[in-house]
Structure formats: structure tokens, C-alpha cells
Amino acid sequence: MSHAPSAPAASSTPPPEAEPATTGLPRAVLIVLGLAGAWIVLSGMRQLASLIVPVFLAANLMIAVHPLGRRITRAGAPRIVGALVDMVVVLVALLAFVAAIGWAVAQLITALPDYADRINALVDELLTLTARAGVDRSQIDSWVSTFNVSSLMGVLNQAINSVGSISGLLTATLATIVFLGLDAAGLPERLDVVRRHHPRVHAALLDFSRSVRTYWVVTTVFGAVVAVIDGVALWLLGVPLAPVWAVLLFLCNYIPNIGFVFALIPPTLMALLDRGPWTAVAVVAICAGVAMVLQGLVQPRVTGRAVGVAASISFLSVLFWSWVLGAAGALLSVPMTLLVKELLVDADPGARWANAFLADDVSAADEPPVERVAAGTPPGGHEPDVDGALAGEGATPREAPSARPRRR
Image 1 (spheres, helix red, strand yellow):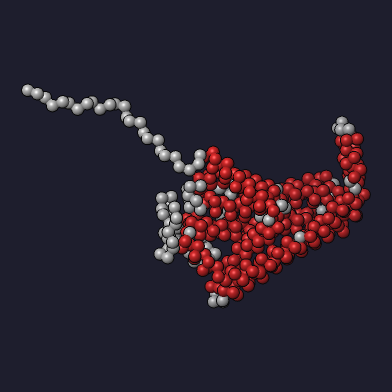
Image 2 (spheres, rainbow, N blue to C red):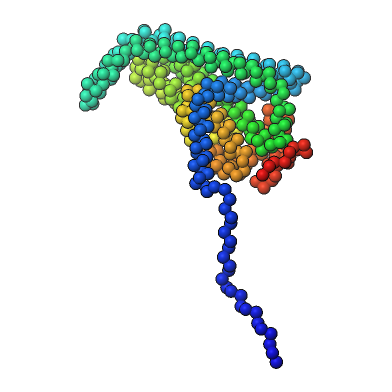
């Protein structure tokens, strides 16, 4: 009796997996190309800083006051009326900001000559202390010989001239505010077009507007409160020019992290010259304590996750955008960082993991912008299309019926 041949025993070793076909460039090459492209973009931004700064500043200010015009429109007024109200409010605020700077610098120029003898005496005391500490007097004589009150007055005069030299920048900002205010009447329709075709970008823009509005409003309110408290404290301590220092503290409040340090130096020196070292110590202690309590503890609780940038990123953004856009970059550092973060990170599910290092809350790495926007009313006056936008990592944005399919 013949038996059918048995099937060969299956091999215990699994067949080798086929290597996936590689398409495109290696990761290292893509990283190098991305860095090169970023460098080209940043170099272009440095060349166009005089154009970018007024446009972006005007857009930020219009976004900050937009809810005021929206309330007027909801009350029954035409859209153009709400847009004009926004425009007027921004123009008045910007002119008041510039006038405050000019007034503070003018007061300093008027008052500093009265302290010439005290400044020179203080410099002599510092030289004596350094000599007792073993520092060679000749090493600092060359610097001291060039320092006097007249040189300090020259610096302040240059500051006045610089205020006049930025008239072109101010004019460009004012003109941009006017045209943005006129175009704001059609903002809902423009946002609706973006929402239908690119819901992720729409949600990111709404999240940016909410974050940047919260940043400007909260920074202004807390800066004013800190300036009033510090100004009253300086006045009670008998420090000269207390209103000037209060204005300086308020203005420098818009520079994150390091602005307060710069604003604290002049009143401390003035207290040292006029009232003595203990008053200077009291100035530092009071101003630093007020800033630590209000801006370090209370303000983050008020803003919550609205701004959404880590403290270290906020500090580094001041240095980075100052290099890119000049001195105005320090003022616009946080809004610029928010814009880049929203468009390049939050709007891209594949890049949202970077929020683990950029955002103040690690959960932002898993939370789409639409979920943050859904909690508030967007600047377009209508609720965002939460169903059509990206509601989760695996969801697919819903395209409008008339929208063209995306090309792969």
C-alpha cells in the first residue's frame, strides 16, 4: 500500500521581511534643507523688518480690540461702525503710548543736570571702593574719563532723536491700522472661506487671535496695576520723578521677563543718589516683591492656558526676535512666537508633539486647536466648525461641497 508523499515540514524561521521602498530624501538631508530654508526666511525677515513690524503690530492691536467692535455690531450697528470704533481706539492708544515715552524722556533730560554733582560724587566713591578691593585704578580711569553727566545727557538726546526717527515707522503703523480697520468689516466672510477650505488653519488662526488678545489685555492690565503700586511706593519713599518711573515700569512691562529688570535700574539709581543706599534697597525690594506676586503668581493664574507658551520659550523669544526684527522684536516676541507655533505646530497633527517643549502645558501636544477655540467665541462672530475641523488625531477634516480636493 502506497502512501502519498508528505508535505515538507514548515521552517521555524520566519521569512525575512521585505524592506520598505524608500521614497524621497533621507531624514538628515530634509533637516539640512529645512534649516537652510529657515535661515533664508529669517534673513529675509531681517531685511524687511521695517515692513513686518508696523504691519504685525497693527494687526495685533486690531485683534486686541476686536471684541469691542463686535459688541457694537451685535447691538444693531453696521459692521463698518464697529470697525471704525476699533480703529479709533487703537490709534488713540498708540499715540498715547508714544506720547508717554516722549514725556518720560523729556522729564529725565530736564531733571538730570540737577544731579550732576551727586553723580560725580557717586562715581568717585565707586572708584575708591574698587581701589580698596585691589583693582588697578588705571584699568578703569580710561572709562571714567569718558563718563560724565554731559555724556549721559548726550545719550538721552540721542533717545529723543531716535523717538523722532521712528516717525516713519509710526506713520506706517497708523496707516496700516486705518486700512485694517476698513477691511475688518468683511472679516467674517473671509474667515468663513478659510474655514471651509482649511479648517485646521482656521482653528489655528482663531486660537492665535484668542491667545494674542489675552496676552495684550492681561499684560496691559497687570502692567498698569504694577505701575500704580510702584509709583505710589516710590512717591512715599521720596524718590524724585516717581511718575516718570511709573510710566517706565508700565512701558517696559510689554517686554517679557527682562523688561522689568531694565525698568528697575533708573529709579534705583535715583533713590541711591537722592535718598541713600537704604532707600535704594527698599525700592528694589518693593518693586521686585510686587512684580513677583502680581506678575509671577497672580497673572499666570488669570491667563491660564490662553497664551500657552512656556516661560523659557517666552524668554528665548525675546532674544531671538530682537535679533530678527531689531528692538521692536522684543515688544512683539510673544505674539510672533504664538503665530509661528499656531501655524507650524498646532495646525499640523504631525508636528503637534513639539508642544511638549513649547507649550506651558504638556497636554497641548495632544489637544488640537479647535478644542481650545470651542471654549470661546472666535473673532469672526460665529462659532468654529468643530465637526468639520480636526476634533481628534484620527479625524479627517470635512471639506465644503464646493471645495476642490487636495492634491497628493
